[in-house]
Length: 166
Image (cartoon, rainbow, N blue to C red; front, side, top):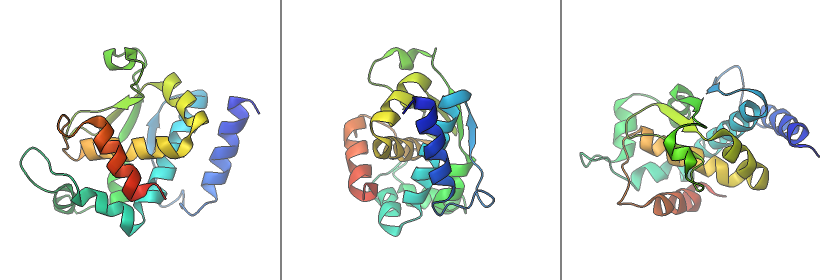
């Protein structure tokens, strides 16, 4: 199956898998296959975040002020999925961090713009969509204020996987 055909089938399956497209709209500013693939990963992340077990990942991390990320989210008076839908996903293929071979997406703490390395994110999703949904949640944690080093990127992803990976 070609990547474009696979992306279309993922989008169609995701649309009928419990996330009401009329209720939640995601802001994915990429084009072509990358748009479809990132949108499907965000929808998958939303489905994971709708489960209480996954939501507890926000109790595992604190922002630089020492506040639990769950407290930060509560102060915004938003649900996990509503916060995810407030994020902007943009193509950052030519940005510096995308030149590193291990980076698929990045954001700064408390910033609502998630920068996506479109071609690498697309390829990684074709290999393992579940992992890329976990990466979306990882980036959501940064958008809520989580810094890095410590914890390392690998530690954040491992914790998100343990809470949200089922």
